[in-house]
Image (tube, rainbow, N blue to C red; front, top):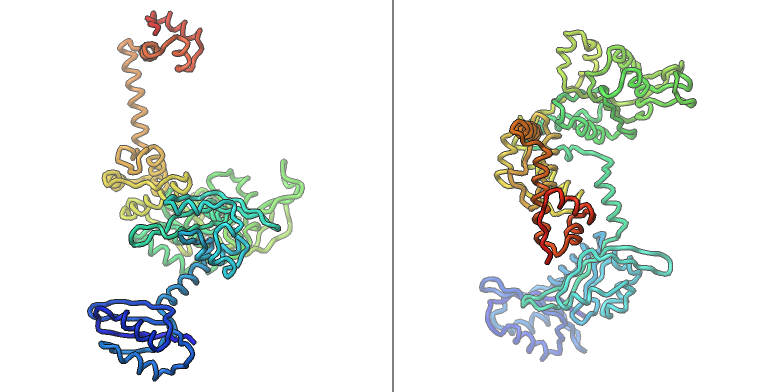
Length: 529
């Protein structure tokens, strides 16, 4: 029978030796021991088993009390290292990656449940066995015992009833003296990686956490939107172009828990007739070019979901009247049809225009304005929340590095200062474009201010280049003449460093005869080596 004990001592030299000698005298075998020292105290954990005789608790108290400086004896259920080991095993068994470790002799010391599933084995059968006993595609983990590592090695495992593909990474395990005492291999199921990549590249749901910002106005907008998301009332998003109104609308749809689809349409992108057919649909033969079977409108497609009407200020007056009836009746009628179709669709509108002014100018229906302006949400422009620029930059750089499979780049303080000083007329959309351009053009990990180029600077640079060309023409330096001088210089340098005309032509990527003609044109001297 095994007994576990916790002993407290005043720390001194020789405690372990005395415990061992005493227990041997009483024919008690030590199966595990752990010592922790803290200040002037020593904490000793023991797991022991007796020989022939049976010892009760009083016997253990009597036996151990003979050791000097012993202050306290406790009987415990679990030793500290057992508890740590059990916790580690639970953690390892609950991660979606295979974990396998070996000692410095190549024997298996640990294998979690995910790895057991991949390799079709059981822990009790393989622990203590050589790694070669497993059906691995290769045994790169053994190279780790020589100090090597490997990352994302593609593995293809074929068993009797299935084929498994996974990525494996391995590293050596070192002790406190930096000696290799084993190795560990991590296995990632390729299917899980593909599913994750698909989720990241094509996100199905947008949450409010995707709308990046810590400014008070942003938090107020999110807090208000969360309160009203599950209502059926129309929400009107107000804000300049590029402030992320569609992203915000998608987050509201997600928060609403509606089972239907989220469908977006830009009211400014389509002419009136086409916009009406897109919104309400049509029956077969309703007009020339219509499909024979007809077509459902977006409100039908998004039934029990959300329709996002972007640029609502651009919606024609006549269509506003039909929209007003749809909102009031919760019914639509396809173009050319007589049947009314009941719908349950949430409407979210967005505009960067001043609708109140449009109502006064009679370019927007007043009754429609009051119908859609029930719950307005204002999204502030970027220039009013510049403190959000650093976290937006970090977010965009992370997205870009994931998309391009490149190391994450970082803005220098000077580059960030240049971003903070800009007025951002294009808001978050403009910031994203500037960051993407800077990250792609920068060869270094750190992006400096020279890579931060705004749209107006590009336009000015183009105007400046055009001005230089025109000025050069005025000075009788035509573009053709400048190109000739540049070509002459290139040809001269290549010919001087080449062994032959044929080699020079090859390095320039032109034919031998073409180069000879250019040599004649520019009367170049040719020196053969």
